[in-house]
Length: 175
Image (cartoon, rainbow, N blue to C red; front, top):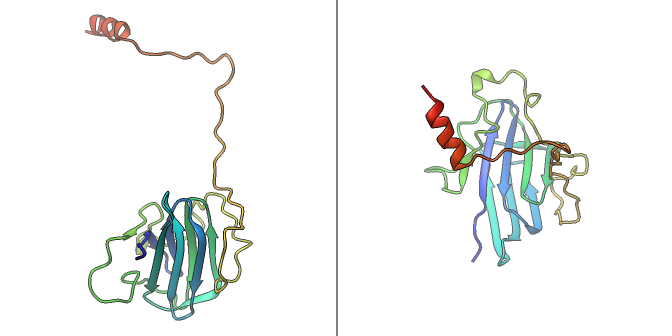
């Protein structure tokens, strides 16, 4: 039996952002159809569980203008909407949204604040140039460069650890 990965989503008037959170995914297959059917399958986790997802998006999308990035920690997609309108929800299905689909508040913009499109969205340096064909199955032969460089402290920088004596001294000198 397969599991559902966690999915986060946000939108603009002309785009939908979908992030499938599945660290260390293997054999990722992603497909998007013009009528708005998005499918995903992969194996992931320490025990290589099978994960599957099929979303019938609220409306149609333009496959040729949509992009994705298969990374080590997640699969990030930007789908171009066929009609430039705000969707009421992500899925066209009736009823309550499944528990594994959540709003991506880091990317969310209210409808009345959507003036810049994606220009103000931090995509974390993702390179979408390699991901043209959305209908193609994608393997894990893509390099992932989402790891950030961490600056090392400058040499000779002083380190100060707070001890109980420092705290006691502060308490006696405070008014």
